[in-house]
Length: 471
Image (tube, rainbow, N blue to C red; front, side, top):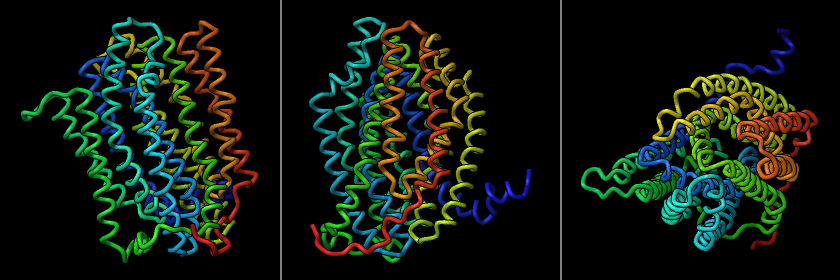
């Protein structure tokens, strides 16, 4: 391996120390959160396969809401990271305020949509092979879970406002700590309320939802309380509620840059939901198998997912400070590191395929199918890592329309139509259908690398001070 290659794609020890100081807390928080979600999923799965199917469908719908929150925060967060990079604390405060308006609006919208259309949305996933009795039972469990989970939308949204702003300023330990405490609370109440321990009633899927709602309030309490207690450390929070007005010029910029990201996350999540709906047409067993697969995927993929977020933070700071050459150098090394880690994780993911599905109280056909899905996902995991890093690179420079085209438009132009046709107009096995969707990740990864190499993302979006009229 030549010295020029190493210099270009491998960083110094200090570089990786800085990278891991940001990425590791995110990995740990997301890893523990997803691990407890996995235990939650396993607990429900051991109650029964129908309960697991209903909750899996409800969580697929909640996933769309969560990604809308993520997209809204990401759009505003591009400005927050760059403001912090240039030392503009008032700019960070204004991005914090804008997040409130957007996220609370989304939380209310989510509650209204799921209250009115929840039953119809869950039913979309129960049209494949299977008995009418089983479908009706899964529908009931899904609705029970969804109705309770809606109480978590507002505290979840506000907690994410705090956590995302802290991360944009380089603080990842506090959100991690709040998340860890929350998942411990969630797991504890799962044990008590799902099965009825310590004199509590056995509430099944409702118990799992109540435990999650409690944990959301705990997370919000910790992250908000500590942030306000440490105003000297988290300077942006000082006076943040003195007014909720923000510069109109900044609001317009955020709307232009942030709306595509919000739409992107919403459309991408809806696209994933549509893919799973296409899979479900092959039978209710497929719904259970994809749920098992996705649960493990969420745990093992936190490594390159967190590194993608780290790309956005580090490159955003570089761009905000005006050092474009450093931004390009850091980005190359971060993408290479993410790919390397994804290859290692893919091997672990594949190795777990014969064992993990056996944890569930599911029929053997479901377990075998889940194991096959895991192996297929492992093959294409490195391409997922490249897609993720490319996405956050382009997003760091505020090129949100390009990320919109790269992510959600490609989903609806490429993945969804192919899945729609194959699931409805052919008899291809579900393994072929699932494999085709995973293989399209390689195409998307190639496009992402081209975008990164062309430098379309190199842009300082906070170079001019925002001033003037307030809203």
